Structure formats: structure tokens, C-alpha cells
Image 1 (cartoon, rainbow, N blue to C red):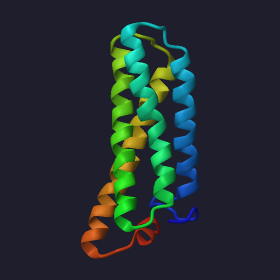
Image 2 (image 1 turned 90 degrees about the horizontal axis):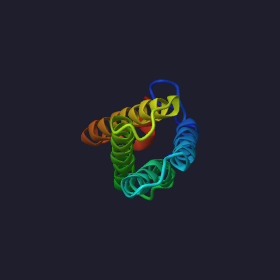
Image 3 (image 1 turned 135 degrees about the horizontal axis):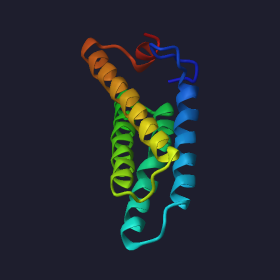
Image 4 (image 1 turned 60 degrees about the vertical axis):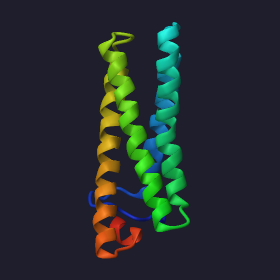
Length: 139
């Protein structure tokens, strides 16, 4: 896929690349603020992995070598954004920290999850109809 493709809402691939990158940066900065403890260190490690993986896998998807490779990478983006949302909700529920930043990250991870979930549905539908990923991005 190229950086000029647009989804149904007018967003470009480049916008999503920047959004997932910014999400990873925000996660790293957020994790620096969490207090150290055995429990928190586990959560921090897991969230660091999932939160940075969303953007890394989206970048990889942009350079996919096949349709199946692209679908696979988008699937990872979906799973990692779901996992990030889980860890963030856990941080909130366990009252590790309660800030506006926590709320923002929960919302953003949920939105990313929805975006990648929608992409996966479109990819599955397109596969059934024989469309390419480029055609999906232009719908």
C-alpha cells in the first residue's frame, strides 16, 4: 500500500502511521510515570511491548510483500491495540495512576482497536470478493 491511500473517512495511511507512532511515544512517556513495584513492572513491560508494537506492525504492513502478509500485520495491529487497551484499563481499575493521560490512552487504544478491526473486516470482505488491499483503501 502507498501512503496516499485513503480510508472511507478521508484518513491517509500516513495519518495512521503518525497516529500509531505518537501512541507509542505517549505510552513510553506514560510508563516512565508509573511507580516501581513488582506488579507494576510486569504491567509496564507488557504495555511497553503491546503499545509500541501497534505502530511497528503498521509500518511493516505498509511494506508487506503479499496480501496475506498485509492481512497478518494488520491482524497483529488489532490484537496489540486490544492488549494495550486491556493493560491501560487495568492500570485505571487498580488505581496505579489516575490521570487525564490514562483516560486519553484508554480512548486512543480503543479507537486504534476499532480502526484496525474495521480494516480487518474490509480485508476479509475484499478477500471474498477478490479485491486488492489498494482497492480497499480507496473505498
